Image 1 (tube, rainbow, N blue to C red):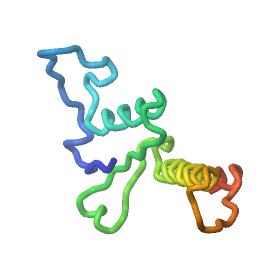
Image 2: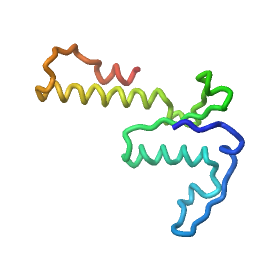
Image 3: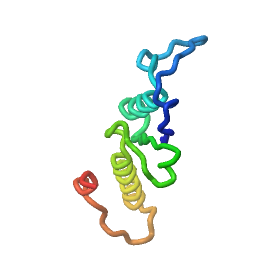
Image 4: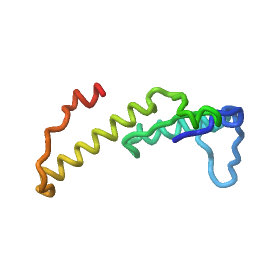
Length: 115
């Protein structure tokens, strides 16, 4: 997820609860904090295998400049997780005999963790 790094996204916002209660951690939190909490919850509650949360200003975004408010949700962790899943999927298909082409051995789990 990429969110604009601006005053509006970083200041606390109120909540309205006409239909259901808002989780306490979201009350008084900025949009940036809410995005961070959402991404963290999705991974920790195993709803997603990985997420990435980055912020960038309008000016810096087009130059590829961004910040990662929470290292746990950084791009490197996300990319390593995605790569590991792609390798596992590819190997599972090959083991099931679905691949007709020879394949080279993939990296070890240690190599994936080391990046």
